[in-house]
Image 1 (cartoon, each protein chain N blue to C red):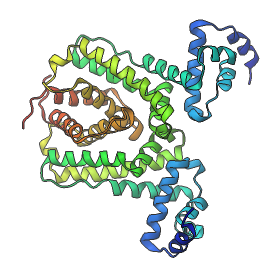
Image 2 (cartoon, each protein chain N blue to C red; image 1 turned 120 degrees about the horizontal axis):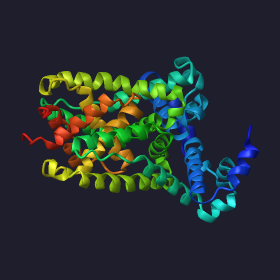
Image 3 (cartoon, rainbow over the protein chains, first blue to last red; image 1 turned 180 degrees about the vertical axis):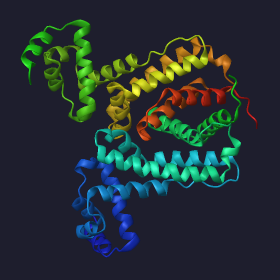
Length: 201
Length: 201
């Protein structure tokens, strides 16, 4: 607890963006550590060094707080670069998925999505945070890259993205291996060539 | 607790394969329900209706029991048909992955793998159960289908399998959508075409 009182005094004054940010970060960390059921707003307030009343003023209930926390973490994670080329953009997107799986926020969200299947509240919240980002972020990204024009007719761009993301999630969380740059490029080439090739049947 | 005494009397006599099977099934269900830390051999014995001493005689510790339980569930899940054709075999494999993600055993194993990352014992056990199956089962399968000869030089057959499996895991556990037959065939075609196409670069 070294430094706690001083930190508390400092952060007690926190307002606006800084307040939102620390509360959402602490919520996400607590969610990963203790799970949704045992998450408590007073505990979040104590760790963040803010008044619990300020939290309740902004987020009336735990579900509101968790929804915003997951949403913020997802938005933060998903910023692939615009390389002006579809393969380059997909490699960038795959790198951001890989970075996300290594980050505390990403680890928490993916574990919550996978582990708390039995809890409809939290899985709906996590799914909505992930779904919102993956529906808007990557689809915007695909329009930008003009991907539809580069892919075979009938290929759903989101299938391309989710297959690449799935390969990375499988590698990191199931095989427990590192998603190296070589691995990322192999997966992108495999899926992109498949999305461009003409069917043989 | 209706019927418990009768069930207990019946299963108390269970020996050999039937004993192994019920103990491993109950262990897996308990693992999914309460997690590794709270799993107890006496509780497993009570639910299975067997003597805890018989369990300890066969599995000296919790880790031994969990390892065998995960291993048995994985072996059980992974029996794709031999269709005599690579695409057909891959569709069969993808169907068995999809069926696995819908089964209680598969749900438990994947959740454990993803959720208990913080517990090195259980994640090592789950990883070893999954890894053993995926290294032997699918690789044998690939040799059988003569897949290496059908794929582009330099493509690792396990990349093909794990990308298909990853797309299904993403679909079921992250998107929370059903892995329909149409979806399975789209993923297999996407990845297989990618593994057969000649690179353009």
